Length: 421
Ligand code: NIG
Ligand code: FE
Image (cartoon, rainbow, N blue to C red; front, top):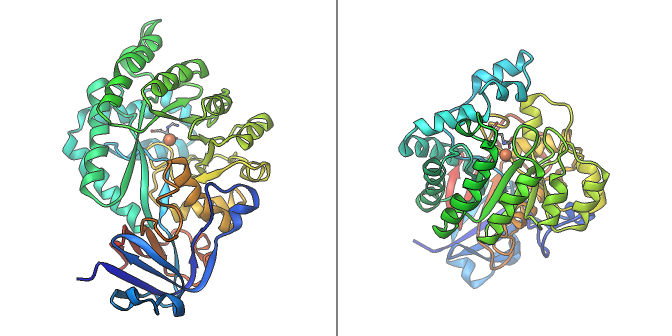
């Protein structure tokens, strides 16, 4: 079998060519090649350009051929915020929310994240892996080739390490690359809640025991905190992220989702890779993000699923010059979807991002937030051949269609990981 592959006949080949993260007007520049082709060799991109030029290359002649016949080709989506490993759905809470209970009310009654913690602790690694594997196949079926995955439903030493080890095993056993994040500071677990010093003791467990353990075993690249009302304060978040930094875990942050806590300022101060959610940010936060290299990762799936009206101010962030990314936030409580195309649809209609801006946010900018922009996120010579082909003629039709899957083919490092029936 040939180790090279020639993809020809894309109605639009979105290269996303260019340097680094995109801000402002650069978010709209998709580097489109009409009637485009990609030559893949040994899992990497060997050539990109118009079909009539690429197919003339000597290496192209001996390559296996895939004619995509007028479909759109783009870089595989990079989903930079997921809670991949969890035990079960929380559909019963979904119904309660529809009937009027708020996310925070459910959490106060022991539902919410603590509900998922109880279920995860009781589950075996095998059960968790089976569910995560099925989810990974779905991610691929919607054009995603790399994801970030957070722990945070274990919240004790053994369970957190169990989940982070699963990230590592899953990354090795199936094609989607997983960037692992330690989110021990998701909420204070039940066993630390009764006593006055409980939260303090839990933060100490994280900073003095779990973070060093996670880092020394190479189980995570990033450290995240849910900095919000009902979770961790800005001060506690700083303690955890600073301990992470000491052990070379790069900070990310869940900030200003339910209330404004000053998390965004903290993320910028610590030069976090990403600051996520941002529904409640103000002008000062927007300015701080715009001046920084911290990516503003927007998660409109949460607001959609929770039925909330206040989405993050994407237009203001883009106009101010922040690096905006989009992700699913796949999790059982606030965003049970693996579909980046659905997130693009929400970004367009609810965040008022254009289809081009949304695609840039879901590819190269998300890759930047994971420190992988030199390897993935665009279709350029030398990069990994991670790409998605959609059954549409015009890239705007990717977000335009919603609730249906128009993904036709997904390639990871040049190998097919999903093909529509
Ligand atoms: O990103 N906000 C905190 N964490 C998740 C929700 C987790 C859950 O409800 O299970 C989020 O929205
Ligand atoms: Fe999240």
